[in-house]
Length: 519
Image (cartoon, rainbow, N blue to C red):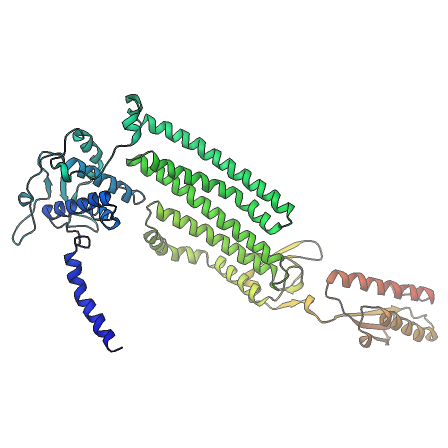
């Protein structure tokens, strides 16, 4: 074990020398026109050899060549692809013209002032000093050179390589340009005619594939119904639409690469692909969250408040949409981090303006976590009383006994005293039956016993809680106090059972020829 630190130290000491001695690991230098040209040529020579031998490490060296190009004018979405194509065209063009010796190109040296621009002899290919951005001070193939790389190649493609044994970058023109008639290669609106025809064919194929996916989904849905697998059937039904869109997006990407689309048209088509792709993926994630929400809400294995699951589902869906939009913007070349930072600066004012909404949102979370009431509970809160109909992000809706709806902000509910009548272990009923003063005293005791019998024999009353007594002589009546408890949790059921008891009390009074006082 003591030798392990020694081995690690030795490895750390020899790694720099290995790095320096291996051309595949050498860092690209761009501090002068000569250094950039040498770096570019070294990388592209390795790339050419890698293409001939199948050496993936050498093929990957094209990234170092791309590092020598000014791609600042190209959207990030297509930067790598356009950079690789431009590097290949430049290598193919440079190997067909007489290049100056590397020694004649300006290089960085003490006391030497380098020119801001350096043009390669016998060409319009230019190396330019970068004066702005992250790569300030580097010499790169100019943005104009990158944009015209294909043009430079087209001008000299009929010329032989200056070094036939080690020339070019293994580039081969698309088969269509080599085999199709001349009219098909005529450029129209940035693309050749054969490319426009190919795009039309791919669009038709994409629509056909989407239809095939939808039909397969329909067949799978029929199969799940026949095999009594509703969960799988719901998944297939919900994902068939986004799956069709995803198929269209992938077919579009195949068309982009298969038809050798380049330049600004490539950037535009790549943007379409990214929008279609992330729309489909976000749609799929949104549907999956909805299915999971429904499954948790209806499952008997999870004793979770359905409203809490509903709220979490809303939060998850909102998160999916926001994440999908941010990822799409990131892949479209928008600096999302900078955008979020910019929004964060102005977000303070927005947060202050929306503090009530945020307070209501956190209030709804507290309601879901503390669960002082659920949908369907009869509550008394802030002087309002009624049945809870919905618990939302911002407010809770309560339907009153008058059938009106009261909307109460969740932030207010979170700080109020809540009387949940549904959580009572027993519901107390208390009232006074007022008999007229002409009631014979001999009938009062039988009446009291009759009421007690009605209450105690009811199947939903607590038997030991009945308290039926002759309370005394009131200002205008003989008062009989009636007090008992119901073992009922549902408010509507309580009203119905209370009605039955009171009707029986009225029938008892009528059978004994007793009358109530009119108030």
